[in-house]
Length: 147
Image (cartoon, rainbow, N blue to C red; front, side):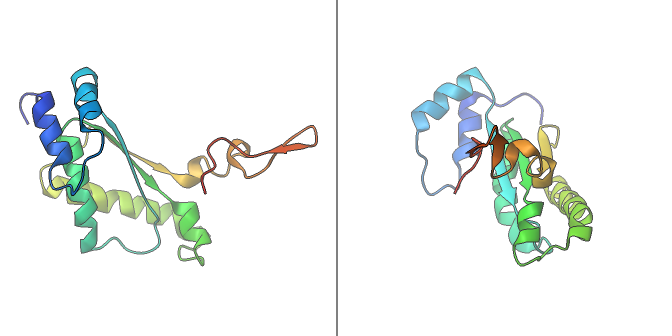
């Protein structure tokens, strides 16, 4: 990709093939000021397969539009989901997913400079993200908790 896409070209890439776009005017404003930050997550419960090309085609659009894309591998969730990913294999499985996703995107000519990967276990097992955090016998829920 030569020159950076214009805000209009970015908007086209970001919104194409979507059934609905909410907040399009706000999106246009943001694209004039800065790059979007996109977050997508998947549980590493099995082998990535051909159906992964559906979300990857949209991730590709985001990357081509210059968005900063973060992919979360929900490895802890994969383990807790009936132990579909044994604890001993979590690291290997997330590495495999990363390699497969990069290869899928590279195979369709997508730049990977603004793509990063994180694992749920990188932060979910820390005290700050535990369900209950003790503070002088008081209990509180962490701010990042979502039902």
